[in-house]
Length: 148
Image (cartoon, rainbow, N blue to C red):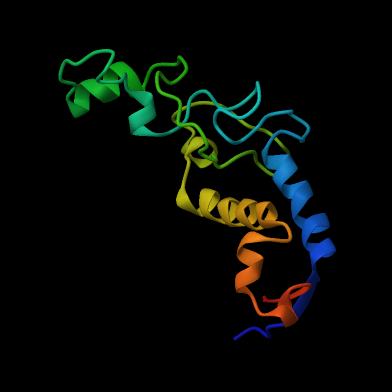
């Protein structure tokens, strides 16, 4: 079992460490691409997601079988007819390359392991000096401990 080390994060360190990462995801990156669908003017248009790849039943109420959905909707090269607003996609590779193509699931799929951590970070950053901070013991108010 690897050795765990304990890091202490002050409020300022929390913000200086995480804000640049959040900014990167939201478009402050070499591609000026937001990896959150619907955020900014340049975001993924071909998200690897069945519900956003097919036409809405409100637009076309006719039945779409799985095979027809794949052949007609999923495999087409146009933008998704339904925006999955707020979803975080896999994002770029190590060299900031990103192929906005529906079949490129590694980069365009909005998986829970991409969305959940960012949701936690955004909730914490939004908390500021009130909100959920009031539920934490006063001793930990200005200094957090994180196990790695």
